[in-house]
Length: 222
Image (cartoon, rainbow, N blue to C red; front, side, top):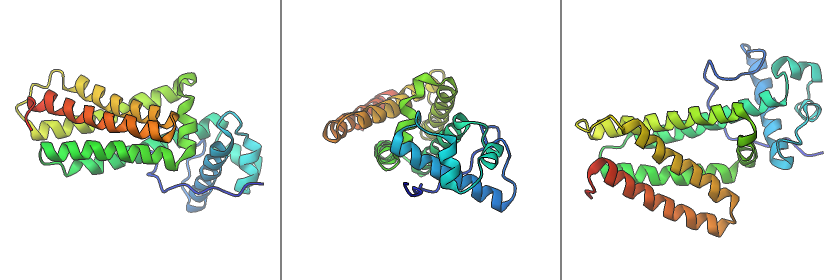
């Protein structure tokens, strides 16, 4: 039997997002939910989300199957909760990178760092790769992903309006969305390639993002 895998600390799920059937209000309940998600992430990393079984999660989390179902009605709920955790963690990292930006050079550096950080997340969290590899087959995961993309684009919009308060904001939401989609999509593509090819793809991705930000928001100025 495999041992419980570890998972990096992730922000709590925001209210309104998909959550366990029983909201964990007590410390013991919260710890149990964390243990369930940690076990599930390890099992997904080892065998993929399709092979995830509730009985295996219960066994490795050392709880009864009945208790597991009180928190999560099915494995899809577990996968959604993990997806939201990964997204929340990624968004927090991006927000941290962007909050200190004061000029174009800082923005370019932050975007490069965001690409590297997102890539590193996928490398360090096999469960994250497994979950998002099946996104096209799960409408709920698609909705979670689109909401996350809009959240990232909103962070970029906020920085741009702070740096360029005079900018025409008519097309800003769409352009920010395109830039963040380019970042996220290319990182996910890089993960599906062998490491050397993936690294090379991201070198070009960072160059494209920097060039597009410069041209789109700063008129090509350096």
